[in-house]
Length: 348
Image (tube, rainbow, N blue to C red; front, side, top):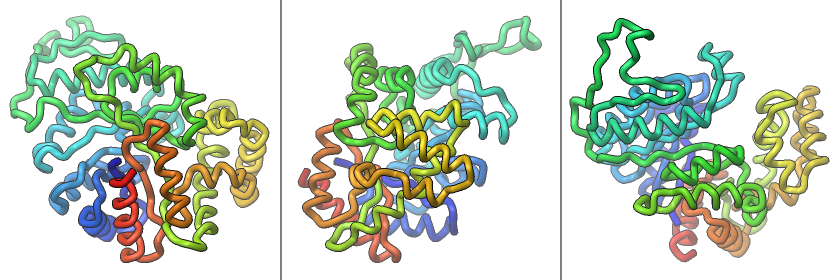
């Protein structure tokens, strides 16, 4: 199994990149760079390309509404060139709060847009002339939409690869089905081994049935917090605030995809309680209301035997890359956990 992590973008970017350099030496395979409403992800991905040698550098994720499909393709190709073929284009819809509130564009038709973006990107990377006319995107524009002077173009520069891996962050049934059909990788949230298949299994199966047989199997990135050793179980509670944010406050009361997924794991009562508490401003109480069983199943924190069991459960559930964050308080401690996890993943 491979190992991936998310770049820490809340603090010092230079320190975060130096940590990735150290983790790369300890066995890290992929680093994802998030983009919300702070600094952009692409600048940091270019910096990572200059500082690292082996890791795949993925956007995790670039929102589909903030860039044209052609700019997404150009950006990924440029990063792939800078990194020597180590780029991964991670895309997703984000949410209406960010897209309409921060970017000021309508949040509409995410599935149709992602489907068309994937086709457009692959057309551009193959250096075919771009003559695309879909439900959401048209290149060139028709005479009734502009000057009428647009013409089909192909990329001037030659990308290092004719295809760059595309990973999609998707949650809903239809979006997961489309991901399984078209994408190279899937970034689920709150993936619980054993239970995730109950919620997403039919969607994954339906998408796989329509998948191009010449395309490699879908990579699945899931895991959780990592701390390996005896007496560390209390560290699992560090995941509570973020889980409470997603289950309780990520989206509106009437439309929170994360709350829906959480509820599907037989936590309907708890899902409502966490959301009510969080939206009432009781964030500490919301975090405390997350069931212990969920925390245990979504972390790799504990003795070596426990972590090995969790890795096996993830692998049996279709996970191909352990997507983790390391709980150590110092860089040396986090590097130690990465080294331990690398050995366990190789033996799984």
